[in-house]
Amino acid sequence: MTASDIVAPVAGPTSSNKHSTRVRVPGKVILSGEHAVIYGAPALACAIQMYAFAAVTTSSASGVRLKVPEFGIDQSFSVLQLFQLAQQTQSRHRQYLTASGLLSNVVLNPTEFFAAALGASGLATLLSDQHGLVIELSLDLIAGGGMGSSAALVAAMLAASFKHVGEPLTPAELVLKTTQSEHWQHGRSSGVDPYVCVMGGLQQYHKGYGERHVIKQLTQYFLVTTGKPKSSTGECVDAVKQQGFPNTLWQEFSIVQENLRTALQLNQSMKMCNAVKANHQLLKQIGVVPTLVCEFIDNIEALGGAAKICGAGSVVGDLGGLVFVVGLNQALIEQLCLNYGYGVQAMCPDLQGVVYFE
Image (cartoon, rainbow, N blue to C red; front, side):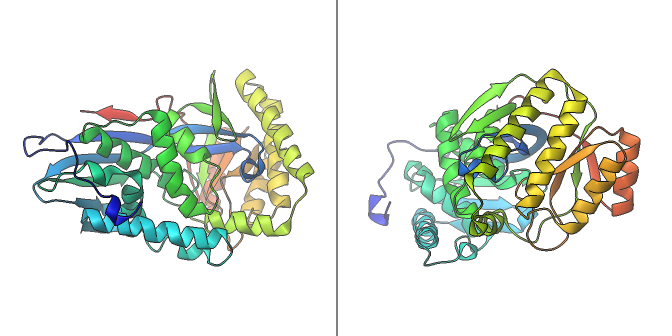
């Protein structure tokens, strides 16, 4: 889309439209299949009760004012600027895909990331010259921690904005538009984060489609935060790709994913632990589990439990993002986390996905 494609909208927010449109979108954890999902294997992921929020109101000024306090963002953009940022980001991403640019150069900063996502979404063509939008984003997710925070924030921003201007997106449209920005972040996104955040629940995701599964119960399952990885998801994906693992390895991931899904749905604790242990070994094999996190997981296994990273992991440093833990009681896992300086909380699934508040 170019600047010449900007057209005057038939309708848009008006000065009488003073109400706030608010949206909540859950984060997610990948229980099995991270990295393998990029190579066509299925992934098992679950939305969680930690959220990104968006609130949109009409402004007397044209364009968009974007406010994200957690990132120190409070900046206004004209319609033309939104389009230009989208074009520039898409151009840098194409350069990365053709090996003529670096992934780290695609998204220059969070401000431009969110603005470019708005510009690429087509929202700007729905705004009038007389009135614009104020978009405020917030989250209780851990940014960069494997919870799908970027997908949840963009999905919340787009869902609330399109709803506010009277053109609500279908879930499929929202997933598609959010996935565009995920490609910028990760190079080649599988799409699992946008899909699970938008749809909610426990999803078996494969090649762009998800199959929802009933969760009977999730007891004694915990999420441990080891800290934000020093390498991004895209950098981890590239590092794994460069090693050229055979397809048989990704098939092993598929088998483990199916075993974990079955054990989870049937609440078979021993099979669940075995599947999580097997998944951890595969993640170690591709080199995305930091040494200190491996030591932590070894201690969990010595106590009778099992654990694995959730998400891309890291190829640099000691921090591995989120760790999924099963088979230990709360007192044991809390004490172990205290020894390492990690945070821990019970895993609580979100079954709703995107929720609108008027």
